[in-house]
Image (cartoon, rainbow, N blue to C red; front, side, top):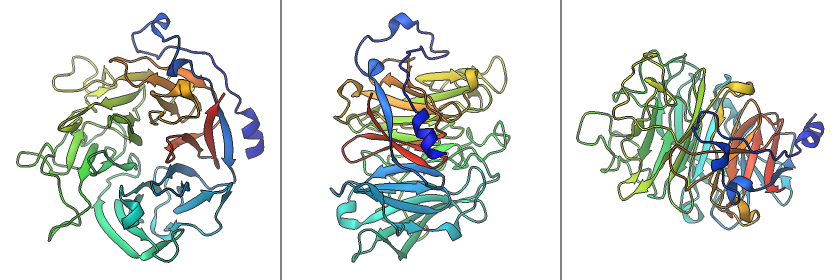
Length: 394
């Protein structure tokens, strides 16, 4: 089945304007990221629900593949190591949107050997946990080093977010969904009294008598109404987000409800990328009123840089990365993202104004669960059906 899938992943290079972008096809650039040609090259198949892949900044060239069911595998030298880097299958819940969902390596991993995982536990709640790789075998985590950083109760089994990543400031950012059900019935994304529906920012290099982490003093709600850990709010399900390696800008793929998918861009400033932004959910779905359906209040809310509708079978955005590699020169400076249901991969110029325009670079049959990035800035795609692909020159 996977071999047949690989044969079907032939690129098509038709460029189409972003649905709902308000820009005409004539506005599309004639060169640069939007005209790049790409293809997918399978690097490994036969996996169990892979949903994230990443490199680590230690010079090793290893790739780490996260399986939803609770394992992290190492890919190196053209093969997957037989022994998992980490296995916590007995700790994670196995619902459709649950499991081992995210992985981030400490910026000083070369020296500290620290890594952080995001998973839903057997009660369905979100857990952020720290581990360290073994001092005697760098290809295996020492499970005895486990330290729970944060646990967040989840009222429903869906919309758990799952991504975590270190920002250019060295702090850990955690994307939290709105807690689930449909339409955010508890208005959690807009409430400043819950961590759900938020982008959180914490400092894991310290602790207090009551917390296994520190809260940066520059977080927007420190010393005022609102939970201190909140960095941004008004998110529905920020399944995948990333920081541009060159600019430090924050890019979020926020999964929509029933009509619109959105990409949010927070430009890095002296105070950080998007400090205190309200992205609008559930008042807004994309740029459109959701609750109420008409006449909603858009004051104080930041609009997405692009959005697209659920036309032609699209259903859920998968946020990606700004390409900063060297293998595909025309793609440099392009932000890649995709749709889980259609397998389409899109790109937009990361430096464009708002609203932006994206084009479709590639059609595939992959169940596009995630993008990934290695040490060199090259990009990868995870197919939830069991494969990881590298994005290469088409």
